[in-house]
Amino acid sequence: MNERSSYAFTQVFNEYAQRDPQAALTMAQGMTDSVARRTALNGVVQGWAQIDPQAAASYALSLPGGPSRNNAVATAAAAWTDRDPQAALAWIKTLPNPSLQRDTIQRVMNQLSESDPKLAAEYVSILPPGQSQVNMIAQVANTWAQGRFDEALDWVKALPEGQAKMDAYQRISDQWVNYDLKGAATFAKDLPSGQLRDQMFSRLANDWSWRDPKEALQFANDLPADASRQRFMENIFRSWSYREPNDAAQAAAALPEGQGRNELWRQIASTWGNSDPATALNWATQLPAGDGRAAALSGALGSWASASPQEAAEYVVKLSGDELERGVKAVIGSMVGADAAYTAKWVQQFPESKMREDASETLMKSWARQDPIAAASWMQSLPEGASRDKAAENFVNSAAAHEPQLAWQWALTLSNPTRQQDALETTAKQWMRINDQQARQTILNSGLPDTMVKNLLRAAP
Image (cartoon, rainbow, N blue to C red; front, top):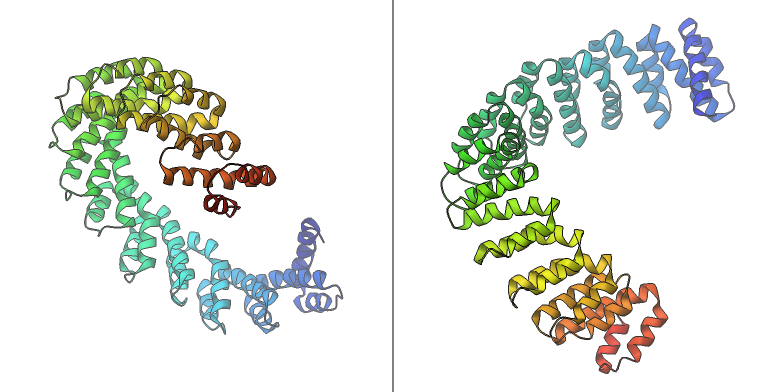
């Protein structure tokens, strides 16, 4: 019986039961096909409950235990709830086991939480403590808050402390911010650190920054100086600098010096740079020299590099010190995606240093996946040293899965024995997945020490 015919069959017995429930029940019970009988009985209970829900519920409860009985009970209870929810609730309280009670309440919750959320809350209260009750309390709170927020909030506040209360607050927090932003802010401010406070702060900052960013900033300044306040400010300045970058920049300049302000400057410059990189860069260069300016420059350059990587790269090489290091980090990712070969030449102009190692690492992680042959050819041009070793190591990690032979060759060039062994093991595992016989033959003929050969052969996935 397909879904369409099952529905039609159910409707026939539904209508029959509304005229003569006993006759419809007798006919359904006499069916020999188990699927047809179950479908017919479901229709009988639906129709019977329309005219005499108490009798239909009593019949459903008398059926043998199992999914069919539970479904029949829930069907009768749902119809009874439509006619007389208080009587239905009183009957549900008498159900013989918690799981049947839970399933029945869950069946009627959708209709009841919209038509009478206060009664829905009473239904939920009879459930035993557990995740089902927690979930249903959150459902009631969410639906209730959409129509009558004050009532929903009063109910949630009166709930006992625990997970159910926290989840209910989370479900109504969005409506709360829309309905009473300052009231929600006062409540969130007094919450202990945790998921609910972070969620409400995030929504408050996003909404408030659109309505009145200066007022939102004042609220943030009154918060304890911790990570939550910093995240709140970052959310404010993210949208503020998108709409009014000059005003956002002026407001940030008035904040106390420190890492927090530096990060806000970087964020403002980055957002500003997406729409007007030249103005953003000009603003960053006029800031006082130091970590804050370096952070702002990296933000502006990162956005500029997304649109014009070579122009941004040409600007970066004119910088020095910390500003140069941050600038390289800001542009290298976009440069590799746009033109890996150009990026490779650009990286080589820097002297051997940690900055050059890091730039080569970023380059190789991407280039070895995009074009391993070209990446390997570039590494051949590098002088022996830390930068080439680091590039080779990153090449192996990125290329081993699709070019294991080439990765193997470069793993052998590593000068550090421990790193070489790690790189060879990484390559061997990947190579054996692709061509086990070829990988094993290469390892056996490699001339490596016997102990290492045995370890590599054991590296099979």
